[in-house]
Length: 248
Image (tube, rainbow, N blue to C red; front, side, top):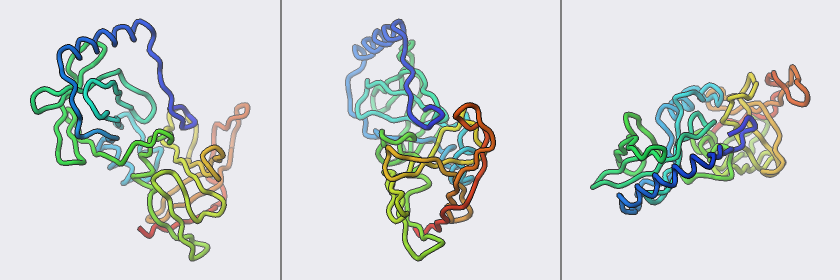
């Protein structure tokens, strides 16, 4: 994802694509295609613990954060996403006996074992992962933060009105703001505060500051302290716009 929070894909050069194709062909000749019962969006326990403990989008992002979208069948190409910023090498899952393993398309070697614990927990190598709901490909964070931190009902501090943040990035009851997109990637994004984008729809979003205090979500305007051309390089929280206390 780029500094604006939008997903990016690094394209391999022709040599890498050829090597990947050769490795995939060899793996397809060696392993049968099989359904994967644990398909979906998986995030490592480290990130889930950090985002729930800190409730800071910037501070929770670090080099230990990893997520992966596991396809519905083996031998379909997927990649790790590190720190919600860049993708890893191409790989596929294969089924060997009762177990599942990931294989690198770079060299055709086994990378990790996959151990399933029920419907929502995996152990990949030495690390635990938890399944979230469906991947939201239209969201800059695949829907991770929407599901982990934002989804729920809130009460406005300035009225008795109820505000709903849905896991699909939609909002109900917050004046003319009907869509939101939390910024998950702060690598190369010069800022001193957490950011969330709000607007009337996904195509018309503006930056706001964000802070959680206990069970209350605080949304602020942004004060730009320094500019470099048209982009700010330093900022701070401005005026408090909304204080939303979580109800459920």
